[in-house]
Image (cartoon, rainbow, N blue to C red):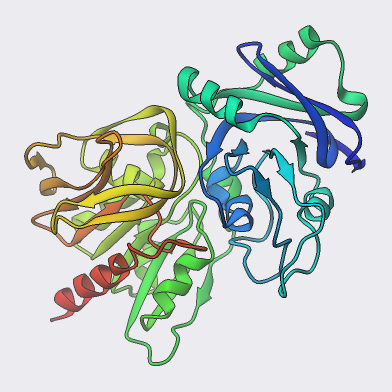
Length: 379
């Protein structure tokens, strides 16, 4: 990515790898950027989306037409920086209005050198991605706008998301501790593959002291904190490349330590159990995805951000090296696996985000389910 200063009036062009282009105006920093074009269907929570490490190396298209109304504050970021490679909106707010706002979204994108584009038909772009699938894309603005053949060649030279090993690029390099709120009841070792800040906070609310460990952590590192449970976080990239986290999870399963994984952690559990993973055509992203908890029959509205999924049978439990496993949750839009659980060991995972900020909160009970596993193991 190369960037220069802010320039909302500068011309900009978005070029997809299949040759389709959209012309608009610069939004945020001026320059050029590349990534995988994906769309998010959330109407709120854009600040959480931007700072979610799972969006590393992705250019996010917002399907809601008006973005930036509430500006940017200093309380809602999910990590230390914006992780999206680029940002695409139709109608950016000219003046933010919220009592917590500290600056405009445009100013924040510029300050963090995030190249974006505005004023394009995001509905048409979303329909194109739904029909053709997520693909590589480039955004070019200001002096970076050249002839389309040159820009297209640049886009097609960018590595694809399939085969990308990215969790190490977003994870912490040093262990840190999030203390329990109130009385400490449990200790959890959390493997950071791209963890969102709200996740350890949701555990801390339940009396859990969370030790957040780097993606390179070993089993010895995990058990050095004497954990009551182990957590594997969300994160970016292709789970087929995540050999170290898979081996680490198998070591945890061998010891029957209560285990919980979300998003990337769900894909890691799938691989650890012997299932395959595959890339979805355009993925699930946004805060309005319907999922059924098959253990209760309850339907939840959930927050998603994933482009890969686990390939596991939906109709019956499977035999794995760690006992029987079943699909616990499924997406009602397309029957994609949204959760796994072991029937003979204390381990489960979901593909979506129960910590969801700014919402919805239908799946918050999953943290209580994790607590119940640890209580059962302790008893």
